[in-house]
Image (tube, rainbow, N blue to C red; front, top):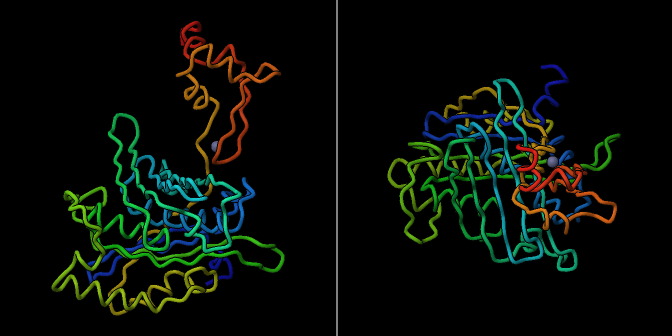
Length: 328
Ligand SMILES: [Zn+2]
């Protein structure tokens, strides 16, 4: 393998299957994606860690769905970090990268030195799937619990999808010679093969919070236990890279489970905001409302929370009354 292959695994999601245990999984590495997301903001370190973990979960989960448009993860809480939102946009053509964006909103003066997840209080973790125009969006939620965002995602899959799922994640700020400080993240997702889309046959919830092990018994339970013990041996540095290729990692962890890999999906930071979409979101307001939003300079401005893009519009051209008068 050439030197270039080390870097080639950055910002990719590698799908795999374990034939011997009827599991599927993903290995993801994020590098430039996190730079793209985080450089738009000047988040404190605890918030950056939460956003990095959420972006990694988004890459792992987004790639498992037969997705035509968008998968979103959202955390809403009463804690210092009020909201974390991410979107994963499916590639519009084969061979193109998927796009990921993320942001967090938080109360600076309520942040503490405690662990990142402690900055998130009581609240909800949600997954939404939007397959585009003409389709019903799909949404499921689970309470925030378990000490990490990945534990919330595991609870979500157990409770809402009845689908045993395990995440092993590693993320942190690294200092590489010449590259300065920047965030990297890497992780593995393991999941029982789903029986229907989008994730699995979705039974009605019982109201109890199930864990993955409540859902499997007999041979399935044995497979689940065995594969999890193997995953427990993974080391942070193996996941985060770049020195160990994900394919080598899968062989090291799961060679007896007959790992089979599929084409890797590349991912990049990207935002779908545009002046048209800003106009669309303002189209619900009356001329009176628009007047209230108008700056002393006589302009309506809007900033994209995801990418920081700054939009400046003429108030006479926005709002539903303006649209009507243009016949748009
Ligand atoms: Zn944007």
